[in-house]
Image 1 (tube, rainbow, N blue to C red):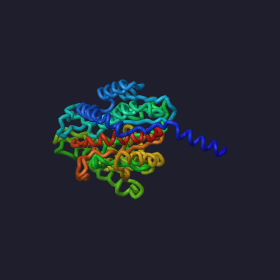
Image 2 (tube, helix red, strand yellow):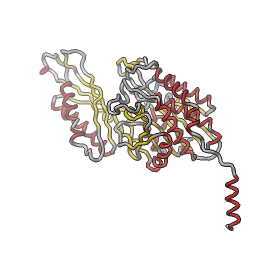
Image 3 (cartoon, helix red, strand yellow):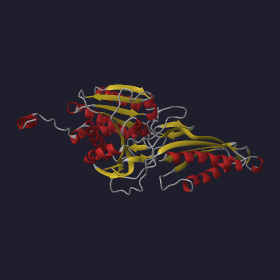
Length: 426
């Protein structure tokens, strides 16, 4: 190529109009007030997994109003929409989870939940104690902002409003796994998939992330200890499953403290509920125990599965009891891994939204991990606690006192817009 042609090409590029990159602050500011309104409305009307009927209807109506292609009743109550810019470019997916928890709210808010329901045979309150109301509202705002900027964008965006991240009701399927089995990515294969999660104990001006393993694999277990009923005054005439269950719980702690190589990765075994007996002077026939297992390495996960079953059987036998084991029980979640190259590429985008810190692996879990089997994935935390508080003392996610500083809504909207625009090829 001769020098004159090179100069001509340079001049032609210089003279050509250059589209300005979308202004994230302008885009976000235009939806901020509505995001707050949506979040408060959803918070006041929480719904458990696979029952997010009102929330799904609200989301679907908004997305249709934006002129998007919308699918409903995906994995029971999921809503999926696609924004097509009409110009070639990357395909990305953005996900928000919609379900609440069986928790009775104790936060004094004008829009606090007063909803109650039956859960595992008990009456309980229902509360967005994990902040999924914020996730839904943020993604509704992001969808609106990206639609308004459609003429400045290339590629395609899939918006995923997912039910049952906290787990489907017993006897049902749900969540990310069911959405994927029903063909979520069959006709839309994303180049990257993103999600955020509001988190208590992190300031609401801060984003937390890490490359590689970020959240633990989560599995549940169910152990039923079977004894023989007797009068409480004559324990020798029966087999006490309560005493055997207590012994199993104590001995199971050695799976973590003595059998897991904790210098490699954390392991958690937690008994979350024990049910047995109905009267103070009757030794019951059986005791049911359910709980959760958190691991980061496959071999350590298998060690806990095998060891917990072995301990339960042998300890129960020593008491003259037997056990019925479901280890694992229900559907589990794999480790949530942030693809390192994608995380590095998106770090500057997150830093444009707010302060970014890198944190150690977290033993919480997310079924967002399943999307990572289909595309490079990035999951990050947005702080939910007002700056200046003692972060170690605030009520955590899943607490009846969980409180969301609404500044997190603004930060989350900007962070998701930044990574979306970066991934689309700003």
